[in-house]
Length: 352
Image (tube, rainbow, N blue to C red; front, side, top):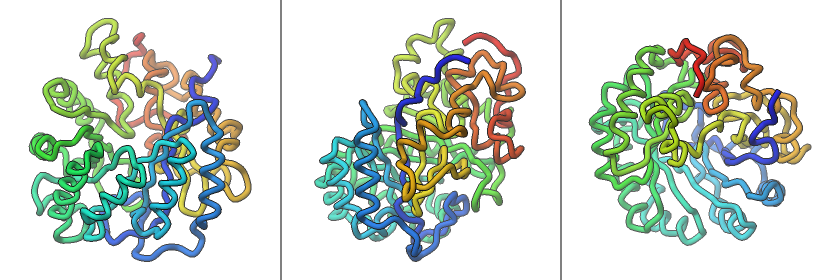
């Protein structure tokens, strides 16, 4: 087997500081609840994890504080300041509620966040609020986006892609542009948590959607990326021509090879470590073993770094090293994290 590319340290750490959230999103991976759980990591335990991550590099991995809603943690601003002081880049993914005021956004900026993300799953209040489960959430999201843009902090918009939301993507792209977002991340549904009640795209529908994104990406005033649809990289390479060098140098290209467990690590609110939030296979807990040690040495993480050993189509695909398929979706569909990604329609093991 060839040497793994991201074996030394994660390139990005997603850290679920809490599962508490005031929304009731239909697709919530965390199955969030209104109140914080008693087993959340304490402030001191979080400090220990930050110290460990700061020693993981070079380079030190950026940390994305997520949830639930990280604003439900009263120590959030302090943790951001301490992470930044340690040399860790910090992004925050708060829920769009009435707690995300202009003052709070300015406080997050002053604490040192390098980017913030908001979820927008519909181009109209009715469409978005139906997904988020709370009336008024669309308006809160647009207000929060305006606050973020006013502070100068780069804004990312996250959009869930399902059979129910796909038809709205064209109108959503216009809203994302009006909001002044720097990045639009399309989250292709993995049916875990509450998301089991939603309908994913078929492989052919996903291929059509990714082709639409590739055709429009150059004219949009923001970068577009995908989450749990790494075969978008293959679509972009083929759309760019024979070499794909232009794509490889782009923000999309810099993500080549990154996937669950290979460049990505997830820390749950209780300290459990998994390859991603969408692949909830626990390898250990930061209360007992450092996050960096778990990432480097765990056999599950190591297996996820060898696409040539994946099963079925993904193991022989010529795009395996830049894509590798969604390991989370493979697991959700078949119980085999090394199995084929059912959202991918590519059949030929051609060279990338």
